[in-house]
Image 1 (cartoon, rainbow, N blue to C red):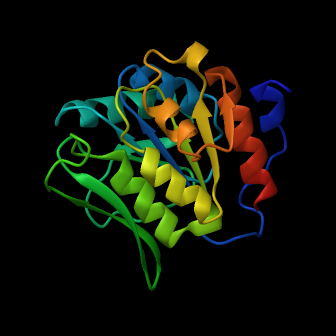
Image 2 (tube, helix red, strand yellow):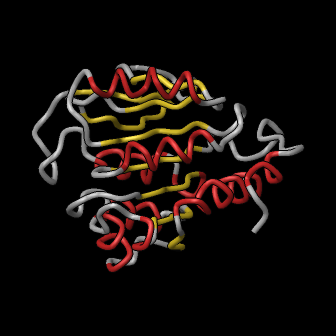
Length: 209
C-alpha cells in the first residue's frame, strides 16, 4: 500500500460524483490519539467527517479546537443544525447525541441531549444508524479502539445499506472491544491497523466520487 503522502497527490474529491459522501467514525478508550492520527493524514478537500468520541462535555470542544490547529481539515464541535460539508469534521458534543439528517438543501446534523445508549451520550450507534438511513451506500464507517459494544449494531446497519466499513485491528487498539464486537457481528468489511486506515479512506472515497 502506498504511503498517505503519495495517495494525496493529485486527488480531487470535489470532482463530480455521488452527492453527499459522508464518513462516520466512532471511538472510545484510546480513540483521541487514534482519531487525531487519521485526521492529520487527510487532505483539506476530503469528504465530510462525522465523529463520536466518548468524552465529557467541554472536553469535546477543546479536543475539536486542538485538532483544528493540527489538521488540514476544518474541525469543530458540532451544533444542532450544522450543515455537513466536504473539508469539515464535526465532533459530537460530549453531552448530546449527534445524528445525520437530510434536508431539502442537503445534509445537516442534529445534536440533542437524551438518554444514554449503550451507556453513552453521545453514542456511536446513534450516529451510525442515522448515517445508514440517510447516506446508505454513499457512506463509509470506521470503528476504532474502545471498550464495550457501542457502534457495533450501527456499523452492521451501515454495511447492510451498502456502506464500506473499516474496523481497527486488535494489534493497534488500546482496547479491542468495540471493533471486535462490530467484526464478530458482521459489521466490518475490512480490519486494518491504524496506520493503514487513512489510505483506505482515501482510496475508497476517491473510488466513490
